[in-house]
Length: 371
Image (cartoon, rainbow, N blue to C red; front, side, top):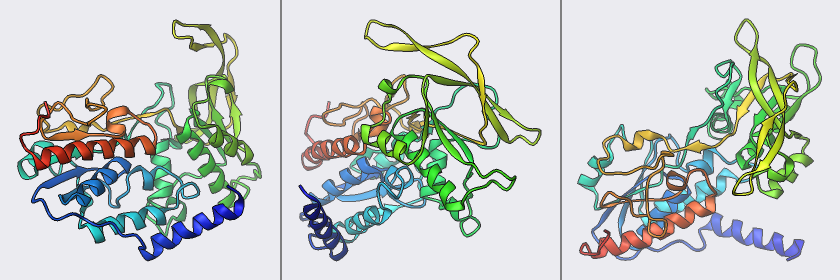
């Protein structure tokens, strides 16, 4: 496909979204009610499929805007918010999906309470609980998770403070810990914030930089190849075989640096994976004023409050059948990151579709065996 074909495809897609050229159509009402918890890719996909089949769907979203990770986790330059908002408006307008924001399941309602009112429940709450390293200085000002950083940028427009209420730290010397796709998004977003505010930090420095600090080598980078190359092209600096051991701060509690140690890859284990090993005597310090941890996430445990019979794994994820989304609790399905841990948008959408198909069988035939 050449450039002209791509432009034409983009034009047709934009036109269809803008004009609602192919609106979804719902089947006649079945009289069945479904609660979908979470409005991210898994929840939205499941909700739309079930609504098309004639079921009355209500989405419960914990944040003040719908979209989940599509809105708060993926930068605008990779996924324009207008596309997601258009898809959500279409689902609400043409399929009659009810959308309730600021509803935290496990707090506003429990899962057991939803089961009293709805014929079936789908859990698509994602994995929004960040991981941190257990090193000194983790509570200094200027240390945050990638979740917090990207949410402040994408959802809360923190870079427009004071016009918006939630400022985002815009450091001149940023270190992102980790090398997955979220780390690439964080590094590239930080780079854009530095460009937005121009050179200088108010203290005479005209230099700014963004580092990705990763304890393994280039060959082990888990991010998609294109994401890595985009980051390199945009000037992100990669410090491979490097691991933080402490975050340094001043008397006011602000980050001023990071002590790191050089690593080397040890002998392969039984699976062939080589673990990083510290090199004795190789410690050094980096000048940083912002540290962003992008080391993976796990589900928020609050959804398990008042959820008798909902089983979770040792990693905190919901135990569910990967083919159907059925959980150990009758009437409850789950899919996406809340089941798999942090993964891709497309895999979450697939889980939502599979769960919707199985839920439909149950909803139209309550005698359907979900055991």
